[in-house]
Image (tube, rainbow, N blue to C red):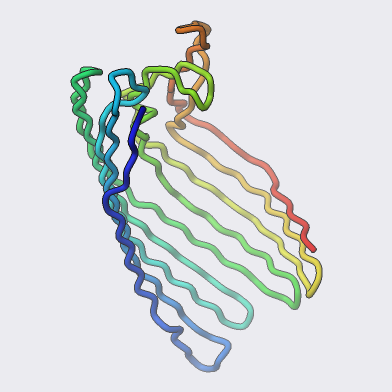
Length: 220
C-alpha cells in the first residue's frame, strides 16, 4: 500500500593517490566525498502505516590515512544535514524539521608479521526515521501495531573498539571487544495494549544506553 522511491542519489568521491615521503613504506592517503539523496514516500491507499513524506540528506566527509613502519593512523570527519517534511491530510500531519550534526572517527593500528592490533574511536549521530516519528498502524512485517513519537530527537553514540587480527594463507582469526555509549537511544517497546488484534508498540527514547560485547570470527 506504499510506493517508496529514491529520486536522487549522487555520490562523488575524490581520492588522491598516496603521497610517499622518505621511502616507499611511508604514505599518506586523502579521501574526500559528497553524498546526497532525496526520498519521497507516497501512499496509494487511505489506510497507511506511515504518512506521505519527503526526506533530503546531504553529507560531506574527509578521511586521512597515514602509515609508516607498520604503524598506521586514520582520522575521518563527516558533516550531515537532513530535512524531513510531511504534509499528510489523511493523518492530519504537518511536520518540518532540520537535523544537523558532525561525526568523527580516529584510530591507530600496529602490524607485526601476521598480527594486527587496532584501536579506534567513533562519535556519530542518527536522526529519527519517518517511521519512528509517525507510524500509526499495523506493520505486516513484524505483526504488531506500531505508534510513532513526533518528539524524538537526534541519537548520539560514542564507540570504542579494540581489534586483534591474525591470518596466514589459509586461516584467519579476529577478536573485537567493543564498548558503546548511546545518548537519546531510539527504541520500540510494547505498551501492554492490543489494537486490531495485535500487540501495540510505542517508539520511545532512552536517555542513556550502554552496549558492550565481543565479536569473534574464524575463517578458513
